[in-house]
Amino acid sequence: MSYNYKDILAELRRQGYKITPQRRAIIQILDSNTIFLTPQEILQTTHNHPGKFSLVTIYRTLTMLEKAGLVCRLNNEFDGASYSLRRTHNHHHHLVCSDCRLAVNIEDCNLEELEKRVSKNTNFIVDSHMLEFSGICPECQAKREQSDGRKQIS
Ligand SMILES: [Zn+2]
Ligand SMILES: [Zn+2]
Ligand SMILES: [Zn+2]
Image (cartoon, rainbow, N blue to C red):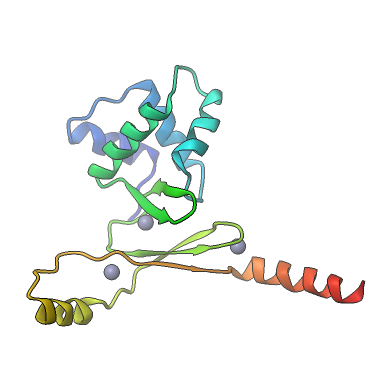
């Protein structure tokens, strides 16, 4: 099961959040993009929507959506955090293409054993983990090969 725009509005109402035009617009922007967006990029897209937007509005909305469990966050070391709608209820990780930023959900996480070991070695109660994969998607691999080929010819 995955969330769409309407599910998200319904879930926010269920959790007691108000749906302001700004919040609605930000959810629409996230919904129409498959890649993770930084708050700055979301702000750049808001001129297509009525109402006033600031980076603060966007950060607040993203924080709210994250608390409500409706967005996923990536922590990129260069661009800072970026966000996408949470498309699945299941525990998952993300694999992101470094060239085109295509993101794929990875649902087969088997880190339970590692968590147990870490917990045993440190006496911590381990209750969560974060893991991000990065790489080059098949399409970008093909593009890279093409441009390498061109370089060799010239
Ligand atoms: Zn996700
Ligand atoms: Zn790619
Ligand atoms: Zn996991």
